[in-house]
Length: 488
Image (cartoon, rainbow, N blue to C red):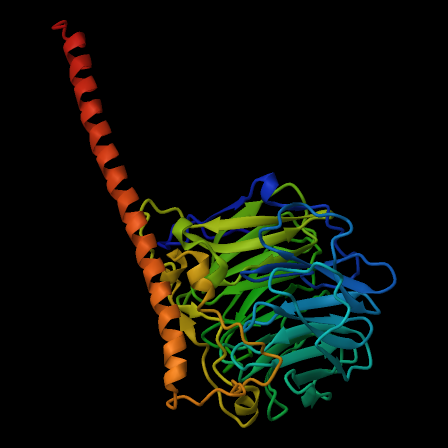
């Protein structure tokens, strides 16, 4: 394929990918060998989850991000499924909750202990049974708490309320063939799907209706993918009739012709797209490829602009993508992928080169935070809401402070905060309660003030040292100048 040679202005033109050092990889992981076009990997700011080989059932590994290096063969796994696990997805509203779909026709939702697993986890919090064939897709609703979508090889899409373990919607007549993938739109009012019958469908799950459909979006017989972009357009990957890999961009208001269509190459691995709504960059990873291509989506023709390719030696078995709030903004990191090899997981960091150490507002607009915008019941009643955004400027605050902003509430229990026995409702605080909280808050304040003073002292000492060294360098340069001039 011939990419455009004209240089266009873009702040992402020089984005470069870099694998981390070996000691920062996760070694000796036996990645699953099941023949299913899943990413096999899910990651959030706390944990990395990888579907692994397991005898007599299905299992996946959950590692704290800090647990790099060689992973012991006896490391505990999440192993409650009786068949191989096909797909996993972290809850966007609770970093300790993960859903899994399996060949045993069930969806299970797990609560991971805060510091990771110390023993094998066999008991899920919820088991969702409703599919008659293997479940290959699980994906959480982007804005409503406790809402989970699952799709199986029975060509049925089910939407669940995980908090009550009940089936909310069953869509069993919209897909005549195997569903390849499902993607929610920005506020979760619609989802799009790619199907083996070569059609891309846009569906309203609450009404159970087909909003739009494009037959033969890609004419090849191999698997397709379709994802919603932030502005409501649909991005697809697939194959041409001649088995060349393609990318396309569609306007749901008119699916007759793609807004843009590009051919990539003639490899045969399915292309997995990862989309960043904050930067409008799509990263495309082919299964079995050893590269990640990235494209910027804009409102001007040709709409899909090739940026660059990250290439490595080893082919990828799967790929996970870190949510924006888990990135290191001080290093201008705009994406981080977790690439699965046969026996290890290797993080790859995508960076925009910048000279300044200051926070880059243009790279980090406010992004979706961990707080849900709606309860499941509100979404079912017909309400929609955009994700609640947070500023990444706070990512400069040490993680202890940042953790306080993350809701630790168990999303799987009653979502409304219960009033503890013996306590009073808001606005009716007792003198005893105020007396007990006042000392602890003042102690915390004193501790913070002490730390701040300590940091300020260190800063003053460093400034003095820098000044002293600057003067010394000045004197030495003066002496050197005199020696070179023959004065000394």
